[in-house]
Image 1: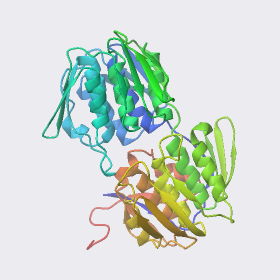
Image 2 (image 1 turned 135 degrees about the horizontal axis):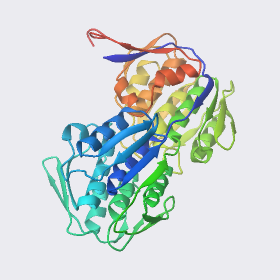
Image 3 (image 1 turned 120 degrees about the vertical axis):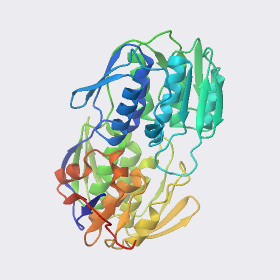
Length: 426
């Protein structure tokens, strides 16, 4: 078992480059299967979710190779019309993009329900609604999703709720459907725009990504393309919040500041000093901080993926702050571990009430999801004593070499391996 040993009372100080966006890359790689020609995808993060996707693509018959460190060449001219391996699909949620892709490529797909972080109920009903509107038949059978279509035809689809996954999945299925598809009440995340740009680079006709309405004129085939994944705004935001919480200073490069407007605004509201350039953000801590209210919303609101790290920052801010989670119902599971460290947090429905300005103390804690794990690292950096953090495999899903990157920012944490129990009796 691997774990992180995090030295407490440390300040972030240094420069770090942001990698490619996980939430874009996990949709773009499956989208490469929509063409029978080869594609080249750059700026890929080397994280375990990407490793799993590469294995799935290879299992389906695609020829996949890293031509350079962060450039992946994919040739899917001879992929198999077979179900993707359940042992891999079950391990992360973004595998559901294979539904739209394989439906668009073969007119049918059979796939287990996706796995990933347990963040409460996250149904795929809006995905199914979109596939059905395009002319597919969907059957749920003992944990399997079976989708078939004689021919996909464009349709007018209105999503009942704003959903990133459903928006992308319907785009993937509709790009080669016959006729025009209009999707309303769609998500606007930058990652959706990036996927649309990739589809268009292959010869698709997708317009409106980043707005409320996406229009897709179906094409009969897609061709080769080269695409560079956008920077990961969530990784950038994590480093920003880490610098703010530790009272440190960080220069974060290779980033699109516009994508982080809600995070920048909220950090300034707390009292953090920030500067931005064309592709960089500089964060500087401040001794005079003010409590605030934070509400997560779909983009361009404050991102749910930074709710847990932001909560750690608010434990260091004097006064009472309120953090409301409006996206995922089960996304306060990190609260119990933070309370072990002395955080004063009360939950009331979807709102966490944080009495800040009190010292955190080290404790044995375990990550059970990706973003909660990132929050625990920040908590370890601000606490008294050394923190032992297990469940590191969740963090590796979205942050590449997190301990190495943080050491570049001047803090001391180590990844270690335990042969037996780390916390005997627990």
